[in-house]
Image 1 (cartoon, rainbow, N blue to C red):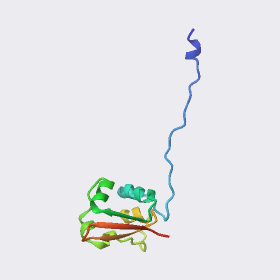
Image 2 (image 1 turned 135 degrees about the vertical axis):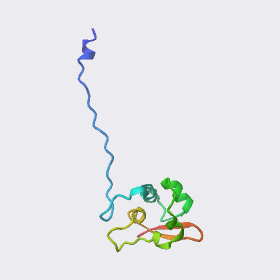
Image 3 (image 1 turned 180 degrees about the horizontal axis):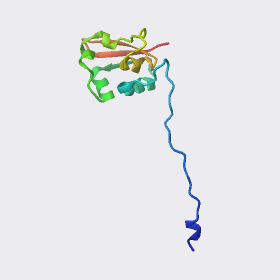
Image 4 (image 1 turned 90 degrees about the vertical axis):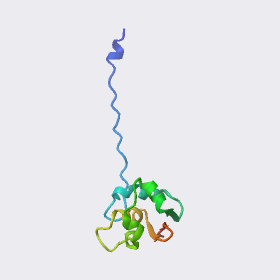
Length: 112
């Protein structure tokens, strides 16, 4: 009586594969700063202001000491082929970055 149930064809569902998003430039992987990249990409605002602590909360780890002390750490360094992962996070989101070390804030602005 249950033969119809046992002989039922098995259904195979397609495997889920996440969409690969194309990014500007040759590098699409922002490494450990990918959550910052996603956050900036998903904002509708042309200007996003974050404190250092908010960035740390967003990425899930503490910023390196250089980020707190050196303006150069926040530089885009577009002229070099090996741009840093943190710079990729905002440049691939089509934003520029201006850090105010004294106030411990960063202003990200969308490039037009």
